[in-house]
Image (cartoon, rainbow, N blue to C red):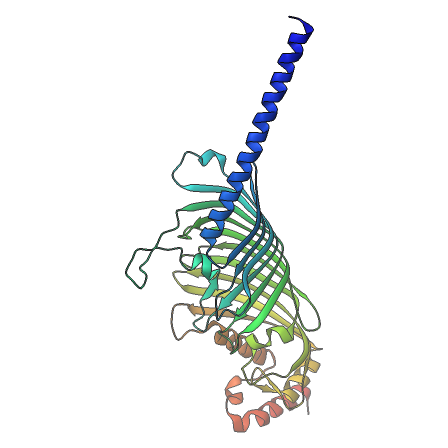
Length: 365
């Protein structure tokens, strides 16, 4: 074979590879554009996708936004700078869709807890996941089963709006959220899902920390969770510890540990609460006790008190309110630690007098 002939063969091979590469690039571009259209359609009319990048082992979604519906307490349900989806290649020939992992970076997520205590997340996406009937009686399209191996959340912000405590809903904001959620089956949400969350809790004067780990079955609410709050601004969590009329906390820190188990809708949750450096506005009350009594008690306890409590009840019982139960149990535990009965405090006319008498006994006056 002559040199010229060899050169022609080399040029032919290089040219063929170049054409194939070009066809592949064009095909991949057209495929990603089609995929972008399908993703936006699947996410609903309020969704926006900046760009989709596809490779042979991953799909990357850039600048995703799902706008919130009317009446939602935030402008967006979800925003994410980058989402990387890695399919489970072993499941390519199976009927069900399996995803190896989803990594979400620099995201914002809003959640709403209604007055009925139910938590709503991504209503545009998950609210219509299950099959049902629309107003015309037509069958809705059911989301195909999707099994996700793991969801990773990095450097996210979460805003939790709670309408079960007060109206309008109070807002808790978490930042620097890093979470791991595994073993998730959509749309049924059956089976235990391991979960681990670490985050900063924004406060008026300081930021605290949240650590949560355990397992939960979202379909049944069965769960075993360990929740810890470290050095949280008490002003932020005041609505969960006091009545609506009690708004007198100026300063304080809260440490909280709860080991909760929910089985067949029955909650059993022993916990520990520590309050430190509590300051109240003049004339206010805290956990049903007058400010003067609380200040004197905290001074006696060297500005720090730790109490144990247990939350118990059926979460599906309409008469059971977790917020009221939490405030009641913590209030009783704190009053007990001070040697005071809340039965006397429940009577408006004798509250201050009863506490004053107890304080005089405690302080030897």
